[in-house]
Length: 199
Image (cartoon, rainbow, N blue to C red):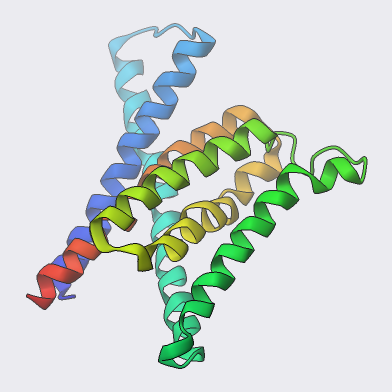
């Protein structure tokens, strides 16, 4: 990937995160019924929401590059005939994380580790991850299934830990929407950028 395409990926991802920040804040305002006092307040709000969304998108970018390094390292550990084991490992980890979040705290009688990470929240994140995985598989083939699902579900949860620690649903939603959109955008657009570069 040349510098121009890398810069495009960086800035476009930040823009997607910024728009996601505006959308999440707008939804929260509609739900909470907060009045807008003036046009100036609205403009300041939009700018601040866009900025916070860009911060979350920057975290998404960092996570995506870390994941790509992990994916490259993981594939290099297995000889070519056995690289399917890496995909199996990613799917197994994703399944373990899902089961752990849904059932393990209840079985121990300790409730949930994070108050906002309810079964409904986990299933919503999983559903979004499955949708993006489906689109990615249609775009590039079945080999993208395991890494895409792992990144969209497990890595997104890891990136959301700062919001989860606050144990506040508003803060969680405020971060989850722009972060998830930025992750999805990178997954779907990066391959096209790489393919264009190869051509």
